Image 1: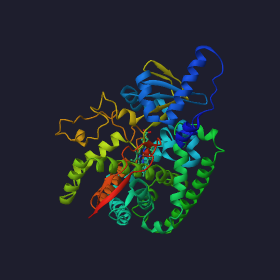
Image 2: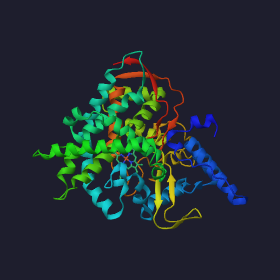
Image 3: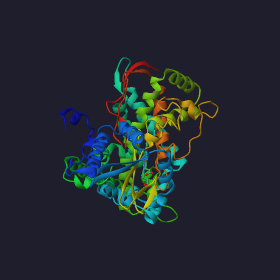
Image 4: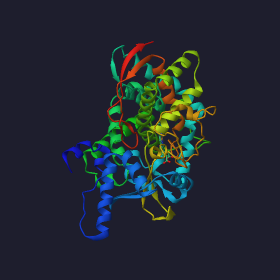
Length: 452
Ligand code: HEM
C-alpha cells in the first residue's frame, strides 16, 4: 500500500482491510483479488465505492475474503426486502462482538422475545411527551455554547457543538444533578464510539481485540459502567425516581422493571447511540442550510415570527436524506434466502445503506441537490417516499428507539443556533467520514458575521 493511500484511508476502515492474500491461479484468484480491491476501495471511500459497485455489479457485490467478507446489498429492492423480512436476520449474531462495549442487555445485541421484553420497558422513556420534556435541556446547552462565539470568529460548528449535544444527552438520561458529576464521561464515550465505528462491518473487534482502540474502549466502557451504577445507586435512595430516562426505566411498566444491570446496559448504549449521531446530524443540517442562502434567510425570517414547524421538518428531513448520520446498516443472516438471484446463507453479513438509497436518481430527482421542498406536499418537488426509500433510522423491530429524541434535538439545537447567529460557511466541500455517526471529516468552518 502506498504511503498516500495509507494516509487517506479513514481510521474506521483501516482495521477492516485484511492482509492481501491473492495466492493461487485462475478465475478464483482473479475473483478474490477483485473482492479484496473492492474492500480496499470501500474502506478508503465507502460513499464513492457504493456508487461504483452498484453501477458495475447491480444490487449485490461481495467484498473481501474470509474472515473479513461481507455482501453489499444496494438499491430499493434490497432495502425493501431486508426491512420487510426482519425474521430472516439476527442482531445478536451481527453484534455479538460489540456486546462487551454495549452490554449484553443492550437492545441492539438481542433478538426475539428478549429484545421485545427489553424494548417494551425502554420505549416509555421515548414517547413524544417524554421527548418534548427534554427540548429545553437541548436548547440551554446549545445556547451556552453559542454564547461564546463572537462576530468575526471562525468556528468549527461540528466540534464546537458536539459537547453541547453530549451534555444535553447526559442530562436527558440522568437528570440535571448528574451534570456536576459527569467529568470524564465525554472522553470515555468518544473512545467507545471510535471502536464501534471501526467495527461497523462486524467481526473485526474479535480479530483486533488486542488493538489499542479496542483496549481503550474497554477501559472507557468500564468507567462509564461504574459511573452509571453510581447514578442508579444514588437514585435508589429517592422516593420519586424522576422524569429523566433513568427515572422512567426505574419506574417500569405494569409492575415490571428492568434489573439494575439491564438498566445500566440500556443507559450505556443509549449514551453511545445517541450523542455522536445527533451531533453529526446537526452539523450537516447547519452546513446544508447556511450554504443555501435562500433557505437560511427563509427559515431565520420564519423563526422571528413563530416556531416554523413545517419548514424545519423539511430542512431536517432533507438533510437526513443527503447526509444520514448512519450511512450504512448491517444485518447477519439467520435463515437462508435468495435476493436478486443470490443465495444467502446463515452467518453471512449484509450491509445496506441509507446514504446510497437516499441518493438514487431513480427515486430522488436531482439527488445531490439540497432541496427541502421535496418534503412540501404543495411543491412540484414533492414525492412521498416509501419507508424503504427514506430510512435514516432504519426500520423493523430494531428501528432507532431514539428517532423522536434525535429529531427533536437536531431541531431544538438548530433553532438555538439560527436565532442567535448568522455566518458564512468556509468549508466548501465537506467530506463525510465514518459509517455510523457519519460526520464531516474536517469539521464545518463558519465565519460568524452577525450576533443577534
Ligand atoms: C440522528 C441521530 C440518529 C440516527 C441517524 C440513528 C440511527 C439509528 C439506526 C439506523 C439504528 C438501527 C436500526 C436498524 O438496525 O434497523 C438505530 C438503532 C438504535 N438507536 Fe439510533 N440513531 C440516532 C439517534 C439515537 C438517539 C438519540 C438514541 C437514544 C438516546 C438512539 C438509540 C438507539 C438504540 C438504543 C438503537 C437500537 C434499537 C434496537 O435495537 O431495538 N439513537 N439508530
